[in-house]
Length: 244
View 1 (cartoon, rainbow, N blue to C red):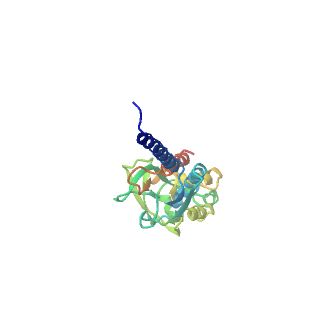
View 2: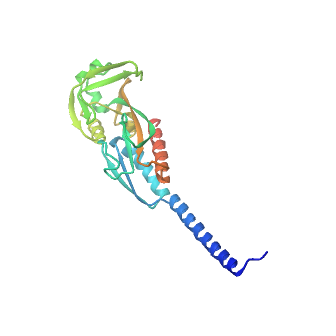
View 3: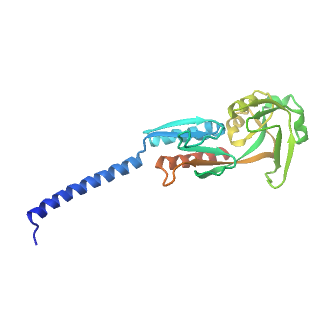
């Protein structure tokens, strides 16, 4: 059997059409593997320095065409209303239509500068905390819920004297490092200061609440590859900060 002239012409057009389709699919695969354009994120202050910054640095090295837009705030922002792709949220999640991926949990610890502790009465119990000044963040009040030896079934509450209040974690840490007073802050955010002897843990058997962290995104189907990779990197640096 042989093709007619019309059949030969149709075959050549179909072969050309197939090559065009294959090229279009290759371009689509390439664009998926090489994301580009705006990547908008909001994160809390506590994750900026040791977790999100190294994660974003690595992400940009792997996907150099993306253009991150980072908003650092402890105020929750709506993804659609603020044209955001991803939010990292600390605390109990509220009901929403967004997808949430668990990152991990962090515990608050009491901390103070060695210079402050050297000139103040020793601290061996919760009751003795009342004689000290406290630095408070925007998410705290003067009523603290505490747990002994991370037993979250057994809790106690205490009221402490607040001397300084700030709306960012970085300024709270700096206040404490300068000997202003004590604070109850996420342990993973204090690693550099503890290693450099700028801060010491106080009453190590007592901790504040455990804060869960999630990555929240607005994609209903498969996530873009750079969002999945960002999630992996954030989890990596989060766990490294916890176990440092």
